[in-house]
Length: 171
Image 1: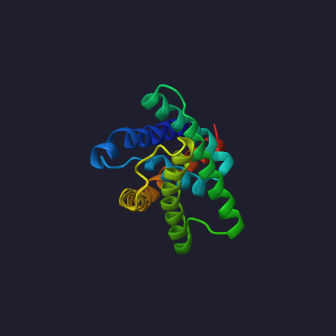
Image 2: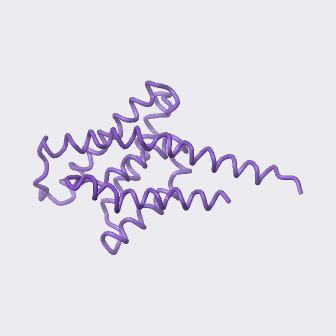
Image 3: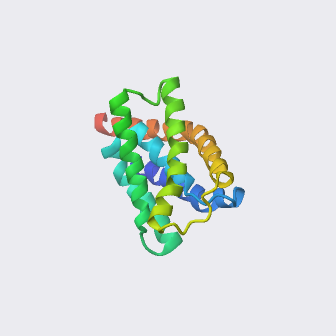
């Protein structure tokens, strides 16, 4: 049963990334949903546990959008590892108030960092490297972080509960 919750969770993220955000915010040029989800999932699950669902979401989104997996998809894995490294070194968790704000700021900075990563990858071919284009994406990342945190936390608690019930069920 927990696998179905994980599939539903990933399908919602893919739908949000591919359909809802481009419809509501057409000015967004960064895959903000994937950046925010990689930060949140890493904070909730840890780096080794987040790799299978994160890679699945990245591969599906890239396959739908581009027809193949892009090299820029490595950025999300780097963000995930950076969050894990940062959380272990500073002992901040997503449960504390300070940890929430630091992780939200990290998601915003990672969104801005995607501009630079894409700029380096395309050898300076990105024209959208202006503060007027970066700042709205930063604010949208903060907003998505605040909206997605309780949703993903709830999904992960349900998945954890279902796994515990399956493990301890007496037949």
